[in-house]
Image (cartoon, rainbow, N blue to C red; front, side):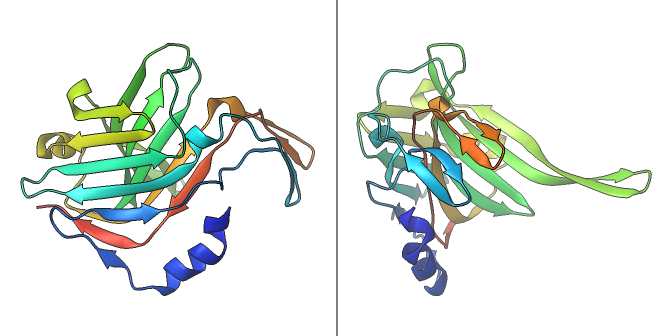
Length: 216
């Protein structure tokens, strides 16, 4: 993807941005770079464009801290998102909240069912004692299902209005760093055959930037 090339180098060299209250912190990716590869072998790939590409292709995202301690999050993709499917499609904005933890704001299609839902989840690196020392793992430590009043989808734009109470329930904290966003397409579920990764005909995308958002 273009993000992983010149764009990524530019972002790493630039000074990290900081968000102001009521001013959106933006992450721009641009359309046309969703991954639609069917087969990958040692860096080479066979691409099969489908009509699933645009609605898994990230255009841009924003996070806007509000004076009341709430947070507005938007994720715009490059095509109108169709009705929910019974496979695990998802659209996520993720932030680093420190202490080896990150928080995801996510809309997703519920696997095996029709409805589309949304959540905040917090995951951390977990260190536990073991007979021969310590073991580390990465897992979810908090999760909040979002009510219909806290998020919506209009055309190609997912919008989340996350009150201070919702953020507190999900143990989000007040400092959010280095936003990233990604989409997953349930149709791309694949398998490895030798050195080749064979996927279904779908699309996904990823983008990241550097910076800090501080909530009141």
